[in-house]
Length: 353
Length: 234
Image (cartoon, rainbow over all chains, first blue to last red; front, top):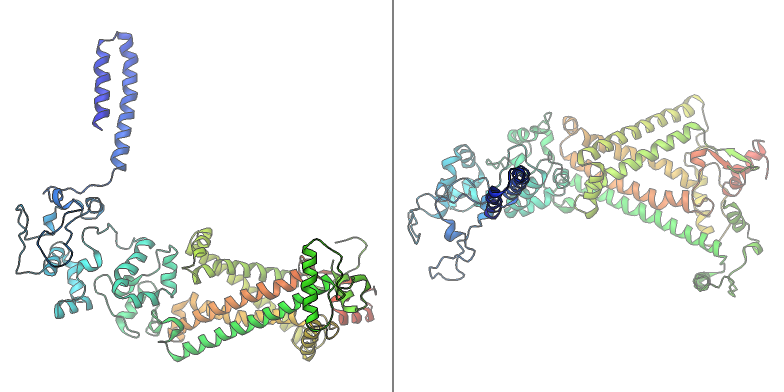
């Protein structure tokens, strides 16, 4: 970028020694160069990757892909690398590192960790500081219950990630985002639930880009993570978000049925069995009927008659000879159409318009 | 139509219109529905994009379904007119309802396939034509009912448990595949690939059938029409 600015300046200075007429012409040329230069600058500014606002200089070290924790721990050294480009595109790009990494003191080398608090607790508190409402909702969830009881289970960053949290407007999420969240965030732990929901219309429509279709969090809540059982008032509420007329009976619709409906009410399995059987039987009979019809008509066209297997072999022989370009066949099974007395054959061939 | 040939009007304007509506709405539903059922297959995305997304495809699907059901209801009235008011002979030779002869015709066809007998002498409707007609009733009852249940899920919820929406989805999808498979492998074979009609039997669109063709395809009907003096013998 500096090059272009210098280039313009050089030309500008050179122009000073010119005549007045030359100056006017040069002035227009200078304008053109300036406009092009500015346009180029603009393009470069827009096209260049977003860069994190690293006011504290953390990325001087943490921006190095090879930066690892040098403490001689067992196993692989932990990477301390933060992709500055990825972070620059995240919703927190304008935040300094210490906004979330609280309780760290800037020393070099940086090793000040609050040993009284474990990582998960620090992480939760970091999010809570700016997002108290979301945190309150989270505290009522099944996720928080596991966290507080067993110090296990998901915390904020388990679903949202940390350095690459994307900018999303609630209620305006794209279908791709909703699908990705279902698959990668919810589905990472609830793989079975996601796989089963995939077979229902909501996720199928979402997969084809229909952003109004509900994904996991549209029913289960963003942070409340309700379990949602059929017939319960909160389930009715969840359905009513999109289906205003939903009543209690409506909630007996099952979103997470196993393949072949093995975990469903026996009525569902019976219907599935009946209609699958019907589908197979009817199509097999229909296609078998059509196939034997086709073989008869093909034989009429080729003029192959006879009994038993001879019919089949005559059929193949005639086809072979015809493929060799030998229209006349010596095959005794093959009769010329005109010579046929068989009335049905005559009917068929004459009838063809 | 060829000059100097005798034609017999087999289908009146209502029959032709009814089939045309059924055909176009069936194709419309067939092209908009399956991409959702097979959402994860490679072709589904392209097919949905062709319609301009799930919303548009759903709209087309519902409009088509509406016309199809309307066509069906008009046909039900038409049948009621013939059976109740005109007192038509439901099991007579001109009827499209199944009767005993259809079973012997089916066996006769199978025998003919294996050179064990003559081609049966069909009446006005062959058994495969009757089956295609009958299948529409089954299809509308199954696919139509389940389709409306899924279209208005909360109304369904007012009357039955929500689990019937799962049931409706199974029926709608399975029966649709059955209908599409039947049309592709059996109906299209009978109306396009049989050597009597290849490459297309235009009778359902023009209503007219060459008497010569009629003689070979539906001999019993032909004999009856000649006897009644409705056509000249060929």
